[in-house]
Image (cartoon, rainbow, N blue to C red; front, side, top):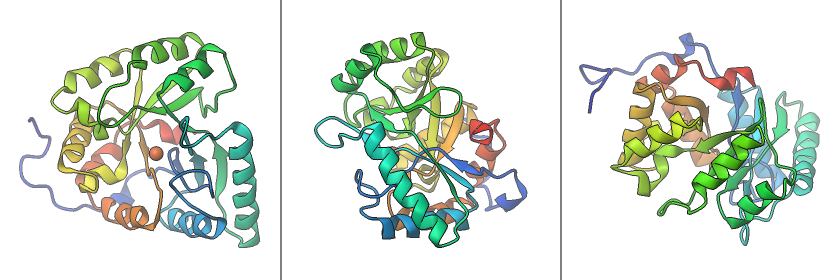
Length: 246
Ligand SMILES: [Fe+2]
């Protein structure tokens, strides 16, 4: 694999690079999914993200039929609770809502019936697919989202096992206009060696449009601190990331 680094790169001071002030992928809203279970935990995570330098979070709870039947109403309610708690504690962190849509039949139905979808920024829609097997609905969903003027954003492309060894498929999706969001923690090897490799390659190929924390719990916060010293994180910060327009 071609590498932009000739020798093993040394840790560098990423505080000198233009930071990302907005995170657009997290599970910090209380009681909606496998992220924060309650307001207290959400506050702890929010404080951790503020310490990391974030000023704004676009909160993206899972929307997945059978498991997480979140709606714009339930997500709004949870955000209101967390906003109130943040204000009480004088924590300066702006919250917006969106969602991480799991690409299943129910999501396709939502698109086809033109139900309200939670987009963010310039009509971006964050979606994920199953981890082990491709979804039969991917192409159709992407096409229909784009026809409706949405810009689909694939969450953590580096984490899909079925894509390993098929980097061309990711490149194809990117060419079709699907924006790619890499998890910052993938760069530390937190998820797997394969995820780390694909994330690095995507950065080298300048195919990354967004970075996200995908923060679920405090272990993720600790890792995010480590990731700040990662040379690929620095390389990613040098890309024209769309986080900066949110
Ligand atoms: Fe996520």
